[in-house]
Each structure stands twice: as structure tokens, then as C-alpha cells.
Image (cartoon, rainbow, N blue to C red; front, side, top):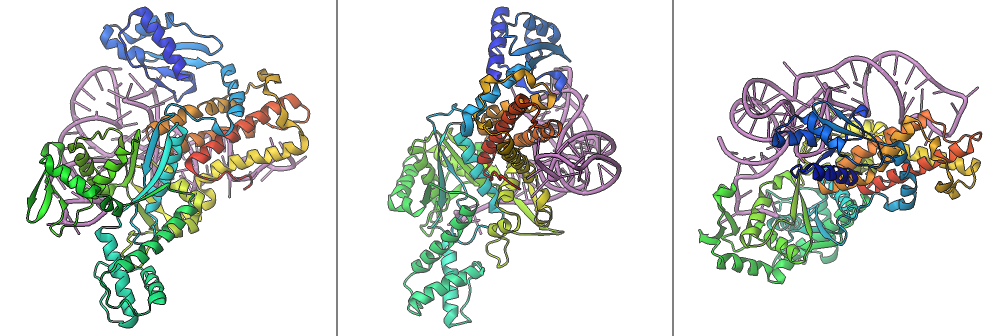
Length: 548
RNA sequence: GUGCCCGUAGCUCAAUCGGAUAGAGCAACAGCCUUCUAAGCUGUAGGUUACUGGUUCGAUUCCAGUCGGGCAUACCA
């Protein structure tokens, strides 16, 4: 629709010899301002030195359009041009949705493009805590959303198995192992205190007994911990229906020489210097950096920046059209350093899109508590899912824009789980399924209705037309949400679908034995609504319950 | 201290390159079930968009400052 409007306005511009402007269409909140509006005349006012309303009049005068599509064009306010779309146009959406089925709303804008989405990427030092949920759920929805705009998406999980965190985890496991024999054996001060570390130690003890009391290194402890923790993490992800295609480990970058190659590249380009035994990357103050950063510690180990840079170079070389990273705001500064490193080596970072989401504060009543894997008392993502369910978890985290701070009151989520906004949407879906079950009994053969044979003029109430209008927006909404990487827009949209359906349901009896033709039309509207809800649920990653 | 992010109804959040009377859900209040699921619908109330100034036809949106919160300022990731 927007394409059509852009075209006819563009033609009018040509006729009038107006300067080229990018024309933007809004959807007015108020019905009386039409279905679409543009402020083109106001934007031109300055250039043409002419009042906006006069320009708008000229534009309308030179506008050629199909009367079956646009019923009315008006000037309003300071110079808005409002377009009213004909009710008949929206009825055409019915066969379109029924034909499109599970693909209705998909866009081909990015067809044949590839995208890599990296998210979660928590190091396997323990279970995912509830705060990780935001990223898990956001990424899941975003991956789906990108697919719906045409991308072929690779879902990727990166973890630093060579870094300090994993080493601390190994030390923690070793200490717990030793405590089996010597209860007084010291536990590392910054170690991971959770009971699961003891479980890992017990597993090692069961296999190796006391043979590892004086190990050459802690590799066995690290590996056992990594395997154990990854199993738990994948289990949690699985509960939420998240499945990564690629698990990329940092070690592989050492093994294939990419780390050393990257160091050499930095050195040969004169971007580094040595000081106090460490290798420093020069950071440009003009780009907002306050000081240079270490990329190789004096111990000889790289800091996280170096492998992160090498990892992103690897992704760039794999040739994706779009590379998306999702990080928490605690990485808000560091990703800039990584991008800076990549750019200073001469690589193009324009295909890399970084999404930063703000932190989540969890509350039970008046108490807010910290998410720390290193404390022994934690609220895990598994706990959250157990408490409020996978659908509600997914929904709550995706419902909000990523860049907003989020207060998550667990007591409230538990208490009000039945009034959770997710049910508002799913209930609309279940309601439709109920009607269809009824139709199975009383309107046998409704599935064979050919929409070509129906008299669409019978659809004429506001609640029917408005519902169809909303349904016809789905494709635009998907594309819009996808291009801004904001899955929560889909939820905002689905809310209006459900709202309009509930109103439609309330105002119109769908199955009326006295009026077969009208009933069949309304059944089709139900089928269309069901399809749009289902497709939307699929994108945000919640289930489509037939009954509630 | 410095950098990034945020501040919208009692609570959690929306608001499409700056647009028309700032919208939903929850909570509150008043109505609606012999008819397809009342997890619903209809209505009422709730706001100086933290504050102050600036930019312009027009600001929740852009700019400056103030206040308040989060994150980061490590040879952890």
C-alpha cells in the first residue's frame, strides 16, 4: 500500500516539477485522519516558499489514483494530506491470507541474503540465570524475525573456553574435589560457589577416585565442568525452543592460528606497542576512547578483546550480508573496542549490527536481588520458567524494547500469571479455535468454501472492516520490526489484532444457521485472524494453544 | 570524576526519518454471560512525557544544562 501511495505522490511531484523529497507515510491514530497520511506538503513549504496547505492542494489536484483503492483524499490541519482507503480494498486481504497460509506476512526484501546472529554466548561456568532470559528470548525472536524478512539465518553461540572465567571455574571444581579428601582445602576467593560445582567434583571422583589429587594441570576439571554446564545450558535453551546452529569456541581460534595471525596483523600495521610486558592497542581519542587497551597480557595470554576481534574477522570472512550481535549493556563499551580493532585493521564493519539490551532487575515483593553466578543463592532461568511458564517468559522478555531498563517482579508474574498479557493474545487464538470446532459440527464443509463465490458486500460493520485493516498490515509490520531489529513491535501489533478480534467477536455472531452466506464470510475472517496470530506467535516464539 | 543507556498514568511498558487530542495491559471504579470460551466486551478515572532553557509551523522525540537511576571505566568476559 505504501508503495502505491509513494508512486502516485511521486508522479504528482514529477508533474509539478517539485524537488525530490523522500516521502514518508504515517498511520494516523485517529480514524478521521484517514488510513495513511503524509506531511510532504509541510516539508516542501520551505523549499517552495509557499504555504503548506496551498502545496497540498496542488498535489491533490495533480494526483491520479484508482478509485477502487482510495476512496478519498483530504487536506487537514497544517497541511497533512490524508488518504482514505476503500473498504473493498481490505476485503481482498481475505483470499491473500488464506493463500499465503503459514507464509503470509513474509517479506522477500532480503531474499538470498545471509545473516549471522550471535547471542547468549554465556561461558559454560554454570547455569543461565534469569537475567540471561532477556537475551535468550530476544535473540530467539529476532532470529525468527530476520527469517521472516527473507534472510537465511545462522544462529550462533560463542564462548570463551580459554579465558580466565573458565580457569576460575576449573579451580573451583578442583577445590571441591580436594575437599572430598581434605575438608579444609581452601576454596578460591573468587570461585563459583554454587552446589553444582560440588556435583561436578563428585562426578570426577566417581570416575577417577583420588588419582587427581596432584594433577599436572586442571584440564580435566575444566573439561568436566564445561561438559556438565553446557549440558545444563542447552537443556534450558531447549525448554525455550532455542537451538543454535553453531557453537563457536575460542580455542579453535588458537588452534587454527587466527589469534597469532591477528596479532601479527596489528603489529605490522603499527597499531600496537609494548609496555610493561604487555601488548597495547592504540585507541584513537577522537573516537571517544580514553586510553589504550591491552590485547596481550604480560602473562602472554590475550585479553578477551583479541579473540573477540579474531572471531569477528572470521565471521566477516564467512561472507554474511548481516552480522548481528546481542550483548547486555555491561558490554556497551567493549564492543566498541572490538569494532574499532576490526576497523583499524582495514575491514568493513558496516555489516555488523550490535544490539545492546539493558539489564534486568528482579524483585520479589520489596526485595530486589542480584544475579550472580558466583554467589551460591541464585535465581536461574530454569526457575523463572518453572514459575511462570515458557510462553510467559518468552513473552515478557520480548514485550519490551531492548533498550529499556526492566524491572521484573517475580511475585507479580506468578500471582497474575492468569492475567498475563500473553493470555490476552493466546485467548483470542483459542477462541477462534473454539468457533472452528463448532463450525465443524454445524457448518460441515466450511473448509471448502471458495472465497471467490462469496458476496463480500455483506461485510460492512466497522468491527469487521477494522479487523481486516489490521490483518492487512501484517507484512508491513514484520518488515518494519525486522529492519529495526525490534521484535517487540510484533507484540504491539498482535495486541491490536487480538483487541480488534475480541471486539469483532463481541459485536458479531459468527455462526448463524439462518444466514449461511454471512456465516461463511465471518468464518473466513476468523480463519484469517487465526493465521495472522499463528504467524505472529511463531515469530515471537510462543505457542498457539487450541484451548485454554 | 569521565563515557554509554534510561527517566512517559499508582505499576510494567508503547508511541513508525520531529506530526494532529501522548496510547495499551495490570491495579481502581461502574456496567455486560438462558446465544460460538467473561483469560472477554463497554464505559469512568488516571499525565506540566523528571526539571530548565534552546532549535521551528509543530518536541516524548533533536541540542545544552540540572536532578535521579543502571552499566562501564581491569593485564574478568
